Amino acid sequence: MKHAIYTCLILMAIVAGCKGRSKESEVVANLKKDDATFLALKDTAQKHLPQFIAALAKKEAGLKFIIKSDFVDKGTTEHMWSQISEYRDEKFNGIFIDSAFNVKNINPGDRVSIDKKRVEDWAIYNDNNERVAGAFSEKYLKSKLHN
Image 1 (cartoon, one colour):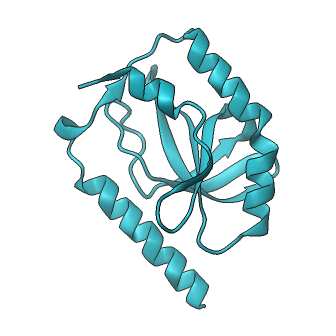
Image 2 (cartoon, helix red, strand yellow):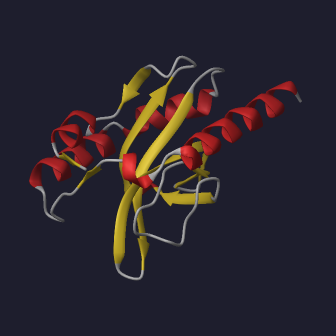
């Protein structure tokens, strides 16, 4: 029971943090659909996905598991993060934790189910928000940021 309450508090804090950010203060990396570097980094994330799945299955306390995938609304696509709680039947289940700019059919806190093949990147963080593994595209995307 304590673990369930702790998990709920963490998720509420994440959602509150996402809702508190304004779009004006956000930066966006605009990439072409066929950006070769990003696609190569996605392949790297897919190649190492078994590591993510194995760590998620252990359910080690203090770790946060997140996945970047695409979300589509009326032909508009955004690539955003979700916190994952389980992997079952080739799908990751969890909660959407990002802020959409143009996609209007998803909000922070919404439940998501993401097909394994749609994973573009993944990361594991500890309680101190220090990356433990993953985030293959982070450095490249930071180099492409636009206000």
